[in-house]
Image 1: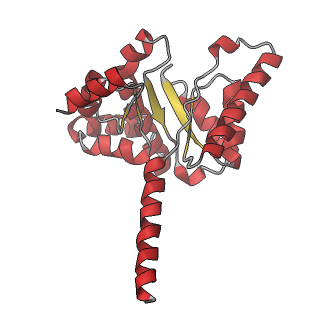
Image 2: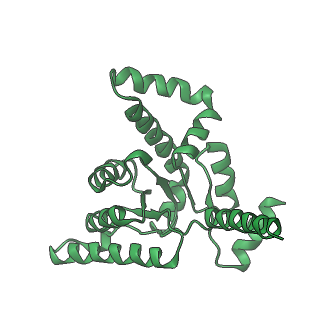
Length: 224
């Protein structure tokens, strides 16, 4: 039923969909149904590991053995990169068949440092080396917009995220265009400009509005 639904949506509408997590069995099935990408923010990457411990426990042991003394945050980051690398391989045929228009794997760094522009930029540079079809998730706030502009100038694929409004999407697009113009001024080949996949997180906004409505509804009747 689900497969027929997604095929019908693809055939009758311009809708494109991402798989909501890089667990390989789910991702492969989603690609068969027409998924053109996958998101892998920290909870999603962790869930992929927990759902396939038989594969990931030995892989994590290898990473820890190769980098003794690293911090917990660094260990999580390296495992996340391994998860994303594996997912990007599943989507490589989509990426190649569409000439790089689709087939991206999103990666998100440590949320504890998501207001540090320098860290956002340095992490994105590192993540961009995982695979050509990796896109780095950058939050749409003041520090994130500065990072988006710099990363666009360097041709790195970006997914501006944690946006809840049209104005945030426009700001992200404008920052991306500024970066491309900077690259043009220095004579860079802008045909190699990275993609910018702007995101509005409607689900979380809907959840917030439902909570507000429920709260106000309760207060209204409590005052009667």
